[in-house]
Length: 305
Image (cartoon, rainbow, N blue to C red):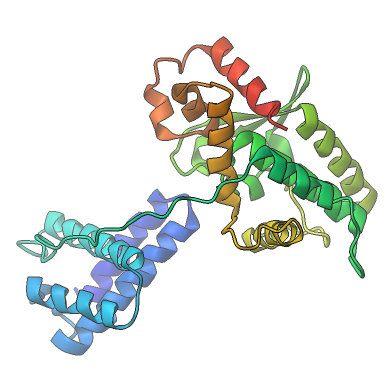
């Protein structure tokens, strides 16, 4: 079996394991690049001859091409996972990745948003810009997205994949039931829509109804299609520019970090935050089964705005 076929088998396993499409894509890109590099040096059957020295030279070539250390570390991790798989299959005796060290990364302080920043962004949604199409629909949807990301810390993949069938009417609002298979860590969770977020949700649903959109997907573009990751990012960047935060690197995931900080400021314990945000650590939390305490924390999160 050719090395390229062995890589394909490995990727077939990964595509079934990872719910986040980007994770699988990164594996594929990294291993295709490794395969091409080694083919040029060692030939088609490079897996049987590659050694530690060749890996070191490959990493040096990545560095010479200007790749960031974080990207090279990801490629090292992808290669290590593949070679470990090959060891388990008996295709190689020893992984050539042994002894290969990751680059030390000096983490930059993550940009976060304050409540006042989100409120200013929401205020911008009411101000129509020249030649802005479908203003009423877009502005109502954008307010809802900003509020939902802030109060729940949803991941972008979770946000854009919410469907109407996952909405459950409860006293004081709605719960969004997100299945484990739709979540990065395979942790099922219930996300509340209440208070100010509920107000924005109802405004959005009224505008959506006026447009006549019938899609089961909750978050839609102005043309009635599922809103993309890029669409959400462009919307966030637009409002950041308007309130003078263009120098910060604000992404949908920034709202997740910001939600964590806001909850901590409200003295919500980390074990409860893990549950609210769906972090894997929350599964083993002593409070996991204390529904009343968890619901109280969720109410606090809904009151952030």
